[in-house]
Amino acid sequence: MWAMLLHDHISMARRHVRQGERHIARQHERIACLRTSRLPIEDALRLLSLLEEVHALQRQHLSRLLSKSAGKAVSELSAETQVVAGRNDVIAIPEPIIGLGLELEQALKEILSESAAKPSKDKLH
Image (cartoon, rainbow, N blue to C red; front, side, top):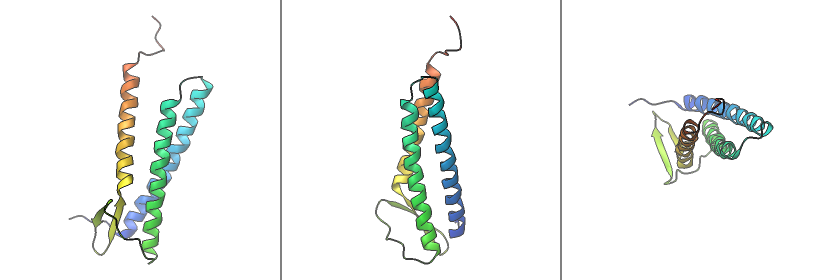
């Protein structure tokens, strides 16, 4: 069984937090462009909200990993937590992160399928 060490999980969590910050910043830029062009922003705002929720959970997860690394007591694992067992490490992945990731994936699929179904405004008829 392949297992990651705690420092590997921390590195990955830090990378996810940085990526999340970039995604949120880009989504704010997209919303500003949509507003400037007077285009609908509801879907973009919904996606931004999901990105911010996922980012908050990623930051919490990183914080827990850093606390564990520093030797501080880690709260007990709840029934809503999936556990990945490593050599001497147990890494908790909160269920809300998994749920929001799946929700984000579904929202992106819906947005992409809606945009693919809409006729292009660039073409003149």
